[in-house]
Image 1 (cartoon, helix red, strand yellow):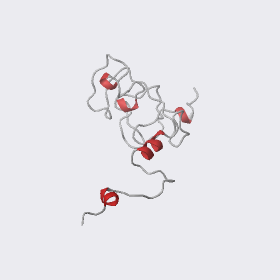
Image 2 (cartoon, rainbow, N blue to C red):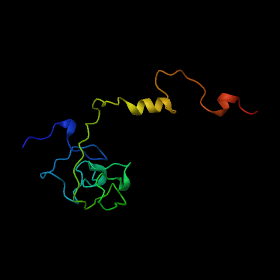
Image 3 (cartoon, rainbow, N blue to C red):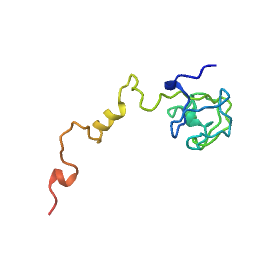
Image 4 (cartoon, rainbow, N blue to C red):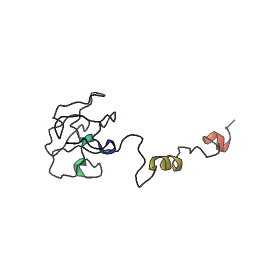
Length: 124
């Protein structure tokens, strides 16, 4: 069996280390060799969707209170996240555009007022 391409390798939700398990899916109590985080958890599952009820695409799954810790869900399938630093997908650099629009200054923006006092004078 050939290993998956690096851009689609199963990765730890916390540190991004590639999971190198012997089986197709991690065991319930398996941890990341890079940071020690639980690997069989909701944050690593391809069915996780915070927008859905129960934050899962499979409606009959049980509620999981702490999604970063181990769970015993038998529907778990490892998410295939792009490698850190990989080219952005079709949405481009959405976080950068968001920051530029809502408070994070883009590098090309000129310096300007930073707060209330800069805009309206220092009440003195």
